[in-house]
Image 1 (cartoon, rainbow, N blue to C red):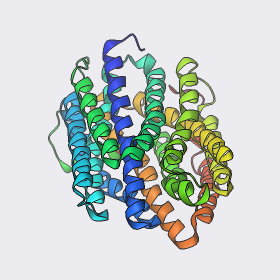
Image 2: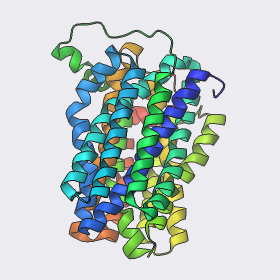
Image 3: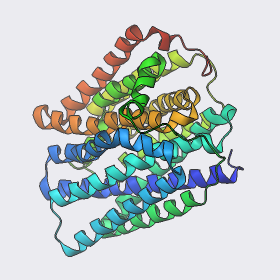
Length: 397
């Protein structure tokens, strides 16, 4: 896979963009918590990214199916670079408030709403169908590498000054844009039907007619929505585990360490059997790891729990992403990918808001504990609601 030039450039673009995004996340989280000391404001960071994604989902799917996906990704990454640069200037100028920071986070969220479905759908433009599952595992590996290096580097740079973290994130977004531009893809079918309400909602109709896709997406939505412990890491780092920005960076990287090891294994040894049961087991392990992290007051144990959390999550991600790519026709892949990313973005970003709100109401540890138990309960319920998903043995069934 890595010997294919276009896929290698796509991989580099994803790594650089996600590294910049994760560096931005560490800097924004620590700076905002330092300004306000509010757990709710940390949750609002997730909400600020979630709202643009919801409002733009139907539009971005149409754009990804009608226009050059490479250029969409490149323009969005340039927008993210500009937002990070402005955050740097605001920090140096001393004019930032929680409102201005959340405003630029919303801009980044809007750009990623367009970027993510375009880059995800682009996989099938550069990779032959039989290799899609392996390609998705490599892409997940790239994302996890970024989630290891990005937060850790962001934490160290933030210790030198928030402006250093923002400046570096801006440079990474710009390099990612350059890599996206030079990707060469085969000619893929593009949506040509008139832009009507029916075509706008066709992705939704397609997913509703495929219960396997509906089951996998909704499982992620509700399970990860409840298990969003990572949004509260600044509180754990400062108030519970007693570490500073460097410790926060390490904690943010820990899930990606487990995920990277697992995704590299899956890239070399792709899942071929018992796909459905494996998916449900992975979600339940994710919930159990969340519970373990929530009650831990030991830094090493917390890191171990976060590593297991990341490892189990990546199994779910690879299965879901492969099912979407393999079972969706190319002319609709942008629209379906946009809705899929809405589900995953909803679970991650709205989950961050839910975690911040729950922590403000009940306390940090009870919020994480209840979230992990809720994730396990959702997985058990979905096994009953979607038996066809539980019975899947192979991707191509």
